[in-house]
Image: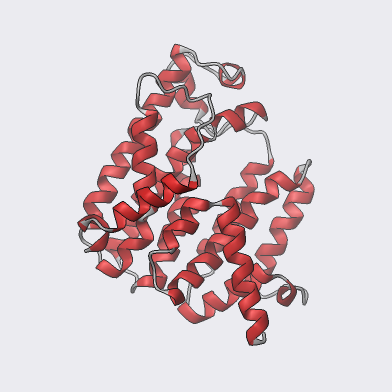
Length: 286
């Protein structure tokens, strides 16, 4: 790829992430340029996988699109990779930072779940889904900033679980409207609730109890992540800056007057302010 084309691909990835995943985009602003570009290629790949659900009305076309990305990672891109700026950037990052392919392939595989209307069956299933998606992104991002280690992998797992659980709750209004359930069915049933209560889009004491339990689980993982953050190299900590937004979101979600079925929008300015303040603390700065 020529220098100009490479620059265009990098700009395309940055624009894609800025548009569709502003928290992760903003968090890369606190990293050196080379690492920032690499991170944005991974986050752009994640955006492309997530957008498949929005771009298809039936599962089969979605499966075909996801298979293209799987083939690309396995080196069977059918000559189209150079024409896809996200694929080109991602392959460059994989080569430059010697990233493993398996976590990226598993992320694609997990997001096949998004194409169907099957409910998330249990907490164990949700934890598996989130570990292979949100936690994987933290782990891959960390490999760009520092040598991999058991401590970083442990941190990545808990950071991703906290973030993923917060995202499930934040997405409830949209998911309920399209009759999709990421809130574990087992958890709802334990509290005397069920799918239709959630799909009604109205808060009930039973559904709220299940959501509160998930908030509590997310907060536990978040506390563990912040404890572990102190024991990883300082240069890797900015990769975990999105946790500052997770902390803020989970605090809001835990309030008694918070209605999980009312969409919440955080301004980009507030996001930047929250991340900037966090970046200047000892937690993230070292």
